[in-house]
Image (cartoon, rainbow, N blue to C red):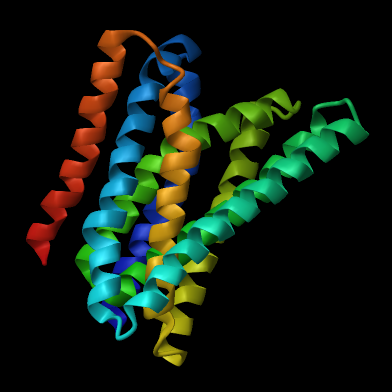
Length: 249
């Protein structure tokens, strides 16, 4: 079990380091970043769909004695992330209406990002309870999803009025919740034997929801045929990376 803890904590630490992507964003320049971010989002779509359908769902059904229950857990994951996004969006709008200043929205973004990182940590930890290859696949999917998100979060914090140094520090503090989530998942897995059977399909449902509901609509904002083709290729690369990880099984 110590090997699982080592892999999981190393992976979630790597995920946490993505919070420093703001430094890269500042150094690289906003114009270049905007030209490349659609590729990052496309990679994230491919990786999240790939991880869900190539790793998480097959493993969940293989371990399950009740396929119907597993299917319901997948739906529970989709609806849980739907409700979570509804709540966070409502809180953002509510804060903006109460005070026209942008600063409260910055605080709400920190709360939302911290909760999101906690969930990411739970997903990574639960995946490593299954196997190292499944854990690596989930970590890669989370990483590819986190990069464009963290760039956006960093921009929101700057817009809220914080300095670049303060925004980086707050973003890094929020990232530590991912480590907490992983520790909770690993500890729960040792205590509750059915934990992986439940969290795996819920994780798959969450990935399907995030990729399909949040990321794919962003890709449709790009209408140039050439860039759309690049998006499709990048999605294919994301799925291909998940396929390559099956060789580690």
